[in-house]
Amino acid sequence: MFVDAVEALEQFVVRGGKRTRPGFAWTGWLGAGGDPGGPDAAAVLTACSALELVQACALVHDDIIDSSRTRRGFATVHIDFEDRHRAAGWPGDGAAYGSAVAILIGDLALAWADDLVHEAGLSPAALARFAPVWARMRTEVLGGQLLDINGEAGGDESVEAALRINRYKTAAYTIERPLHLGAALAGADDVLVDALRTYGTDVGIAFQLRDDLLGVFGDPAVTGKPSGDDLREGKRTVLIAEALRRADAASGALIRAGLGTDLDDAAVDRLRTVLTELGAVDDVERRITELTDTGLAAIAASSATPQAKRLLHAMALAATRRAA
Image (cartoon, rainbow, N blue to C red; front, top):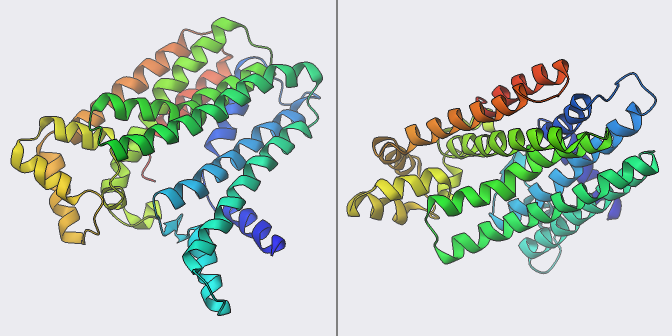
């Protein structure tokens, strides 16, 4: 059974994903003067790669929380093991079994992320700089997830609440802290770290805002998730919060009635039309552009290496203009 779980985790990690977090961590190291041809490069690359296991933990658990059935075009881990339980003809609740196994696989990914960092071969000084940032990042993503769950349960529909969740659940551990981790490994000064974190926060929030749009308007063939999945899951995103802020009683009631329900394609299309006509889509696109611009300005004025500035410019555009 343990071998099956490990193989499922391995497949989950290698089968898809953009390697966004390791890429930003590596670029943060380059930006602070790290030498990709130097003796420390292999250890740094291994430590950066550990972020992909943190991401695996977050996604596996997130899919359970959101009751998602697909991820990257495949069954989510908890659904996969629910199906295995059913195929084996075992007694008991297959759904509970699938969720229990997936929780443990997510925990295993997080534990192995720590192991990978400590076994990477970093110098004691580099590890000492890395460790507190790593700890803060893990706490922030878990805190962001708790804010998200609490916001949905408590019915907080404000734009401010949605942006706060984006800041901690996504931006901090997707771009800001990975850049900070890489810079810490290279011994960056506080001024450069601040510039990288400004870029990371702004571009990270823009990244999530793009994800919010894709969760409603994305092509399933590209995103690997059913069309309108975020609406069915009832996610209180900035897009939804902005639409509700602008809505009259009738359109607001329509949005609230649809969120978190098993919408058919026609109902998803109706809600898309409402969100667009209210101007919420245009507002989110404006926020994406403004945040990307401020993030890029912080990097342009920083002491990051020219190579890293070019990479971060391209990565910001890739993160905020993507189709999946």
